[in-house]
Image (cartoon, rainbow, N blue to C red; front, side):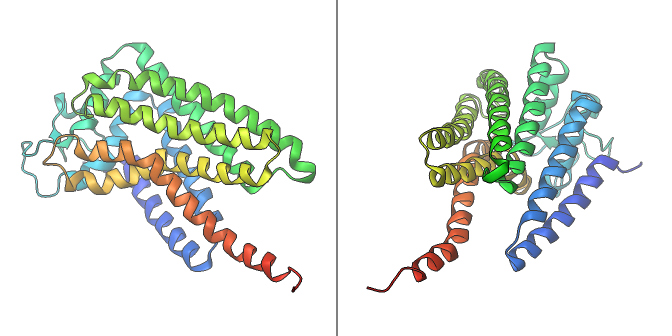
Length: 291
């Protein structure tokens, strides 16, 4: 049986991304790491538009199947593991018949659910992708000098897209209370909290710039970027690691990332910002006149 090209491409990309992270830590420059992450995000998200929701979800589940199946027999032996009819919820064919339970529920809900549900998912993915790209354009081109008007325009477009994206996301999350594989009501309110962290940072970013506090605006902008990276990448990467480790407890792994991804991203971004700003603060202090 041929290996799934999409999944193998993601694995190869993750290996390259790991090298870029190590290089960034060594050189203290993360531009290449961030841009590669944006590109990989687009590769994953475009699949929902180009290949359709069922195939994109099956490919997404296939990323998690490899580690989830280590040590398992042919039948599910763990609370957070399930099968799906005709094994159609993965791009691995019959190679792996056990899948994360949240994954089989994810596939079933959007393959056999109403069209509105899939449309909301596509809307969220497309709009979130626009925000993800624009926030990095603004990050690398701050709103100073001639870039000020462009920065402001991109910020307004980004905020509109973010608002619409989160409406789609919260709408979808309102149905999660009835999905035990996600964690039921805990998952529902966990996704609400994720949306609140992301939108709260965006609101504070706007409040700061409207009051003329450019420094505070920058602080909240970095936190907002952290929340977005957390909600997308920290969510997926941490789940990839903890899912097989916690497969004996239903929905525990998915609940950990639902509740922890966005605030975790904010914390990481804030710690990085303070580290970046520390040399600048020391330089500014050294230029003060002696008393």
